[in-house]
Image (cartoon, rainbow, N blue to C red; front, side, top):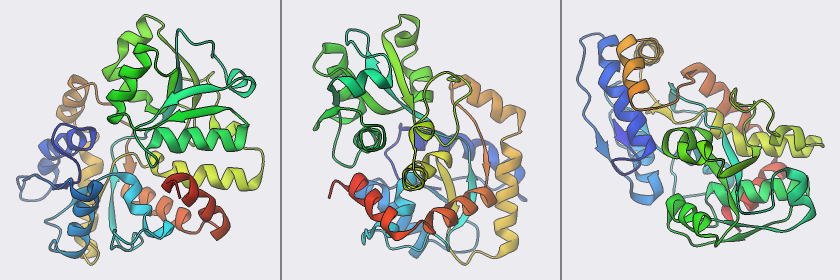
Length: 305
């Protein structure tokens, strides 16, 4: 398994979690060997699986979900055709949120329509920037971004210190697993959620889908958020024989129902909302069919160009 992030991160955690249990559902029970390839922002792993790894079912990958859509935006460093990848499935559905720190005056989307809110970001192409720009565009909010913090943890420290008033692009599952004290102490207000469907924990929180009023806005929301619906997807190279793709897909599906796997996930506080390989493939194809003018808007929002 080629993992496009350093050891210890979320993609690595999901990859190794799957690998510890999936072999029981593959004929012959092969052991998984892991290789982290974080270079190029995770693109090395994607390029390696697509162009170098054997296309016989013995190599699979997991890397940053947005990389699969690089060619759609004209990114040439990712040398793949996402429609030819063998998508195997995903273990979760990511639903990020915009949050306001408790010392700020912001509690609703209307509040950030009526007054400027300062949020932190780790960079121009980070999810915290993309989601802030998206809600500004379609809902008329007034989020001003301060860039350059060292990853998400740097933004969170700045938020706790009062340097910024909040953040977009923070996964709800990350809050539940890593920052439960924020919830217990009412240190954050959830302003909006960024999923194609609402998280069951957040039925009363405004959805970005509900804020999209025009057909173009709805297409833009789906374009930018579809990758979150497929969470952290697993894939194999193009050309893997169909019968072996079938074996891998059904093994992943079976693993998500495995009692030992579920207990392991619960122990790690890992949120699960599995998606089949067929459904991931359908989603990828739908997004690649997005009209070109909407793709151009998405490119500008997601690349900072």
